[in-house]
Image: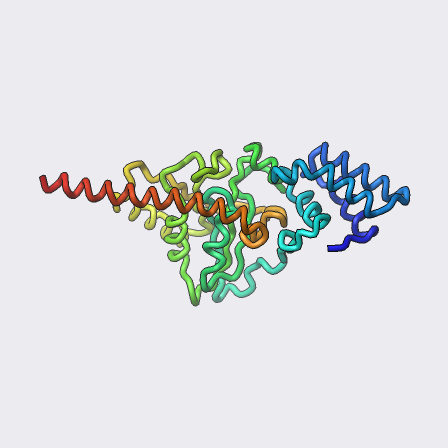
Length: 279
């Protein structure tokens, strides 16, 4: 993707004003902006900025909006796709509804829902906290009380809320109150956020059925809480499974391995319990 001077200056200006930009990033971006405003060569300044940001980019440690800009500078076109936030909205309440689930890193919560028939849109974001407009760094630092979550808009003519709750429980570890899989911390807690009495009853019924199934030796701790303001995450995080396929594949594989091991443990536990009951 070829960046022109005007577009680059506008982006650098916005990133330096962005409260989510870290101070070190801001200093590098400001230096590049000032050089371009002085008439310095665009290509040389972008190359210098890319070199400055590269060590953090390699470690996947740039703030989300800066990471988006870095991907544009390096022509990583797959990772620069823009999510149309305006399209994520309930347009017809007669057949559309929404649901919010938190189950670890939201990167891994999008594909299983989005690729299912009847899903209209899936948005990654933050919810359940106590400040407005939280940033990724703030949520990861556990300063705001938010969890990473996905908001799902679905077609009730194809899918029911109950179907989504059942799928959610298949994707998560309902016995882990301190995170999910390799994701540790309060921002990764498993929570079903319900927006009305009907959703609450369906979620509680599904949770109780899981408790009574005896599949898990440990208590079922998935929380069911009233839905609150859902704040969209930065563009970098939207549809991560499409933008960063290799990285997503590694993370997904780790989760699948854990879930497979957990299922095997449940089967052994059930078999042993039955055998013990007959003896």
